[in-house]
Image 1 (tube, protein in one colour):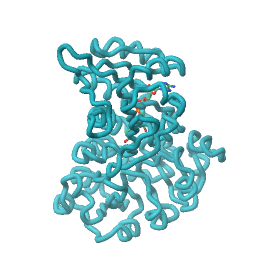
Image 2 (image 1 turned 90 degrees about the horizontal axis):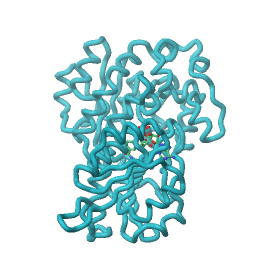
Image 3 (image 1 turned 90 degrees about the vertical axis):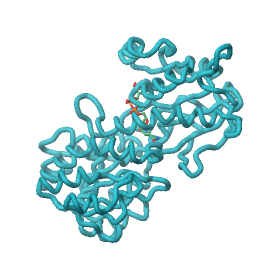
Image 4 (image 1 turned 60 degrees about the vertical axis):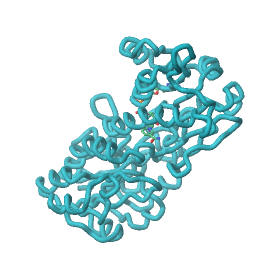
Length: 373
Ligand SMILES: NC(=O)c1ccc[n+]([C@@H]2O[C@H](COP(=O)([O-])OP(=O)(O)OC[C@H]3O[C@@H](n4cnc5c(N)ncnc54)[C@H](O)[C@@H]3O)[C@@H](O)[C@H]2O)c1
């Protein structure tokens, strides 16, 4: 199959969907790889490393989209990219459709076969979400600590305190991959950490493995409000797979919080779990509502592209190889995890969470892919 890797064009997005090592594996398996010139530069990978691996460098995005049967990306296609996607072309990338009706409808219209990294299920987990969640969770504390500094508009508090001075309180909503990585970092810095979740088994596990300065609390609207009163930093880390995030903090709840406290809503890419949180970019990451600093960068791992590109491609490569080898139709019929990644096939929505978000019809991926190679 002809596999195309365009340069990511989202603001401050420096990741690339394939490393030279990945290109080498794909070429070795008999595929052709077409990379847009400079696509790897932001991640410290130059064109020569890709050509050494057997890839062909093309001058611009039009050439890559025009040549490839399978487009491999990192972020969702932006409006500028929509007209380049053609009927029958396979697109494999993060899509996060449940948070974006316009994109969903645009992809349905293209007639492309769209597979989303974030919904691919395997071994009871979401293996293509995990590495970016690990990065974003760890970064949430780094960024939160920064915006708690007075010159950045925050309370002016050090997460770990110092001897004789109380440590900051960090509230983490959701104890999944983002949550546990955020909590670990905050604990390591010496903060007083609380993780909330609705999954009791997960809370039991966290209670066993987390350090002593981390406690677990069952998440309800009331327990959240009680903890907001004391929190210096709140990290939003909930997920209902493939669906919009539940709003756990309402605007009225902000009045319970300290002026200058910080919310980092990592779940913003699924609509956010804080009513007042909206997507921001690394160029302008924060804004204030009712005295509370909001950080809502939807592509946090994009700020550390060297780490993120390696982490992402380590996880995606095996699935890309399978998708390229079987093609979209057989992948859906013969590979259960790739069927769970199918979001839009032959113009139809094939992922229930996306259809529910917009009250649209959902067709089983196997039905939508009938007769498709
Ligand atoms: N902004 C970014 O750059 C970025 C990067 C990576 C991931 N994310 C997002 O972060 C979010 C979390 O991802 P994850 O990998 O940690 O997911 P996960 O599935 O590992 O964890 C989500 C957790 O939320 C819990 N949860 C569900 N409802 C809850 C509620 N009402 N109260 C408390 N907890 C609740 C679940 O039980 C689960 O443990 C997702 O929306 C993901 O898309 C964002």
